[in-house]
Image (cartoon, rainbow over all chains, first blue to last red; front, side):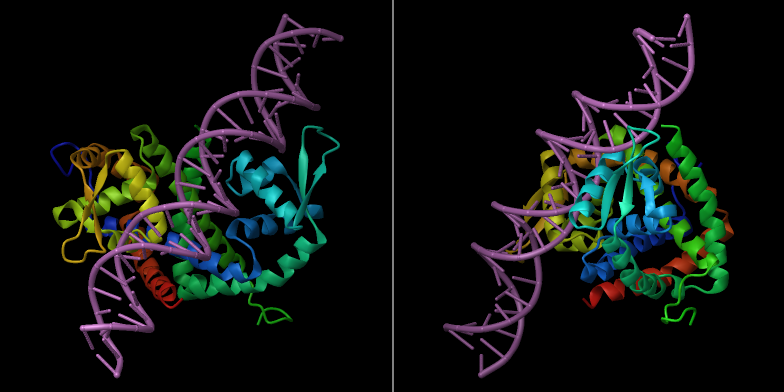
Length: 158
Length: 158
DNA sequence: GTCATTTAGTTAATCTTTCAACTTCTTAGG
DNA sequence: CCTAAGAAGTTGAAAGATTAACTAAATGAC
């Protein structure tokens, strides 16, 4: 115990690591957002396009997409409506479960993805990946994966 | 070059690291937000309280606070208005520069901070710091700090 | 000294996110 | 079967964030 009231405050080292993580995570998101802006996409839009592009038949159930992108159902629903208006995706009924809907990539969505992806990857490289050595990447991954696992399970038991 | 069109796509290792960072950063923010909720604070509120608490006289100029918290002037202005309504801070005129304003921690803001900080630190420990070894923390910091530096300078030259 | 530029901050409009209430369909228990 | 509970998704309203336009004060170039 570090202080009279039992709180274990962060050491300088811990503090510095915590702030570094915080700063990188926010600055990076802003930067990626800025780099997508010329294409008229947000990070959210892009992430949905990635998920759909990588799925069989370029389609996913709304709930699965919400889970994959860590969004609430409501938020995803609004998001998909906006993307539908932009012509990037469309909704399609699900035969096997008549409550369900698919979000499906349109041709325009797919074309957009093919056009934008190289720029986005370049951006991720320039502002993150290429700033780290192979060893750092490996270490980072091995440190962060258990954290992600922990957080996912903490999220589950709400 | 990895493909015909010159795009250097991410390797599996790079991809995994990138996703790990992305996941941790989002899940962690959600978790911290959830842990602050019982105290009626958001992450944003908390960060402002931290900055003011650590400042001389518990006050900061609006612009400095905006820079420190990586927010736009407009967003900060709204944010401070809300916190003013909640009685956590107040605005005060700046004598030396009559355009300027200080955001100042109120007694209630300071009391709130003293009460909430231990819980917040515990939360940061539980969901991040304590999941990493001393070596991992050090490595993480050394990897991320240059990235933050890069991003800050990229942000500057807009 | 005065006029143009820059800096500090706010405001109104718009867009996005969250929250709670709701509909429709599925599933499990009796 | 039929009913209660749960799951899938939407919707409208309220809260939060972004954008652009704005006021007022400071700076700096002549």
